[in-house]
Image 1: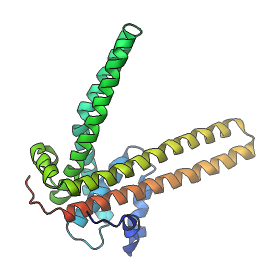
Image 2: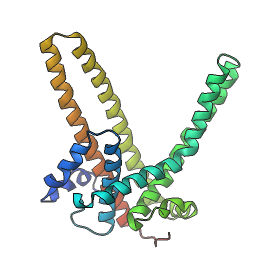
Image 3: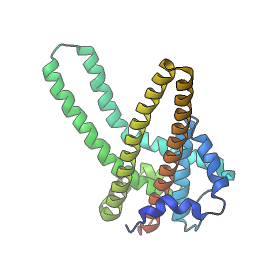
Image 4: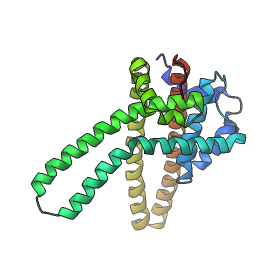
Length: 244
């Protein structure tokens, strides 16, 4: 897949109305729960617009209901694909609590194997899930996620395209995870300063915390837009016939 990574960050600014379209997107980023739905939905909507050849893929907020529905469907599909891994880890965690210190050595080996299987399953299903996202961007039909046999055929037929897509998206998700860990550590540090420092020190820490939060939300927003661009270019590049 020939993809301009730099453009995945800069393409929103090609739209003359980018400010009007993204300000709402940015504000919603501060609302836990709703932000994930809208971030996911806007990325999928951007991918859909690119797949349909739109020169300016940023969607208007007049389509907010479609954006929210796509976000919910994308999250639901992720849950469906990864639920076996969650089930494995959940069962292992419950078994660990139930056994306590009994047979700790033997169970530790089993738990390591189980977690290893879960991680491999997540990687495999994430690969297929991104193919499902690509199909969904093309068809706008949730059934695109559920036709697992067709998605596996797509994986074999377009291994270069979808392998590249998977690598890009995995790298992007890894960077976002690292950023979230750093942001969480800074947040806890700022809270400790606010709780123990003088009034002036607390105010400085509070301002720092507010600016860091705004920066974090802005970066995550940009990451989801880049995600939508990469996904849209994959959907645009894919030359297979839609089967839903």
